Length: 297
Image (cartoon, rainbow, N blue to C red; front, side, top):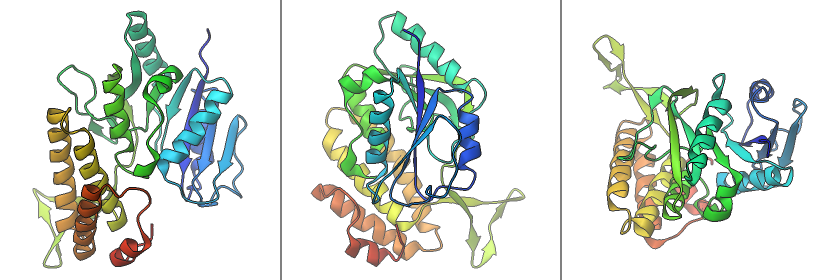
């Protein structure tokens, strides 16, 4: 059966560059499905041909947006689905290289969840002891549609953050593997780099201005909450994987919170996320919690 590749892109407050980004993507795929997650930012945008746009009435989270787009992609005959963020940019041959790996592995009887690029946003992906990607982000993945039948959709009550990690755990529990092309790089924004300062002066080490990867407090809340929930849900059966993930997440949250310009709000977000994660309180952040953080989601 011939391959039909459909790219799915959840967007929120779509950038003006989105149509040109999609034009580039369409050189490698058959069509694109865009889901605007309640921001109404695509209403006045003219998209290239072979692009279908779905506008949600409200922000329901990235997992719901992905599931909506994937469902539509399957309806129009996709054999493989390329998941992308709105700020990701593909290298030439991205899809062809990943598809080649999937076909070769499946010919050997491997159940493939997805194939992923080896470098994302300039950073090499971490590998697990088997040589596969440790905890791949969803953007840039090429997934055979059959994998969703065995693994299921993305979990919607996580809303945002750890959606890809939770899918990865379920995929491995179902006997599916992730493949990585270590020589393939994808441009992707991993967060906002904010210059560090000490007593109001820029922090310069070895002649270079130092930065911290910044996330808004509401995003920190989701990162902490969903990581705590993930540990409680899957930690007993995936101890080594979860310890490694938690260590990386703790480093990111710690430095991002303590060194952030809004550290008080960040620490409130950490505390609220920890509490709700332990309680199993998922879904969209509650208005009272968001109000205490002082930032709009």
